[in-house]
Image (cartoon, rainbow, N blue to C red; front, side, top):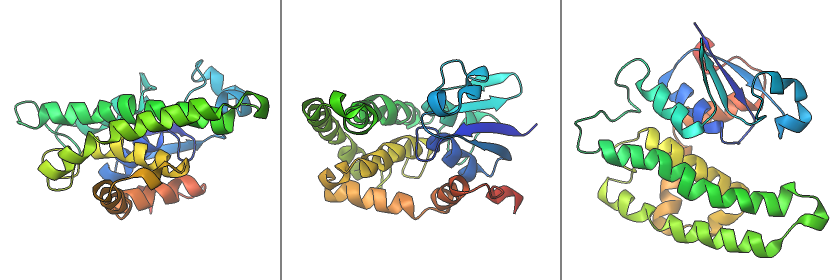
Length: 215
């Protein structure tokens, strides 16, 4: 059965789409305008929260982007994106999946809200600046990981943890926070963008063209 992913361009669902492309898993992509709960009200019948992503795999329905990366990486057994229990890097891998979302993406959602999403009279530069600084401070936790793992988050190779963290860096670039990247983080982000899976993900969300696995 083909998986279905509901997605908005460059939103958190990018993580799930990137994982699908890296793994070469067949999927159907449902592109939605952002925010879908406002601009695509029919979507509420699929996901009453109105949030994205939504991954549908038979009776399985998932809405948390980092959890979806873990699910896809392990759904059919070990994969190039997974680190298995018993591997010394397993804990670091799980940590990276959640570090990318809970630690690096969360503060940026406040920057996004109070600089772009709220009506002009409700925007708050002080809140945005405070949470931008929060993001920058938390980003310092990434550099030791890169130094210890050959330029990747864990295990000395590209894994699902890099997808989770990489999306946070994509969001930072969108918000103009990438100017705060250290040289090591900037190099890491540049390398992530050269991956074939990342390039295919960008292409898949840019149009209604068939996903790469169908080509």
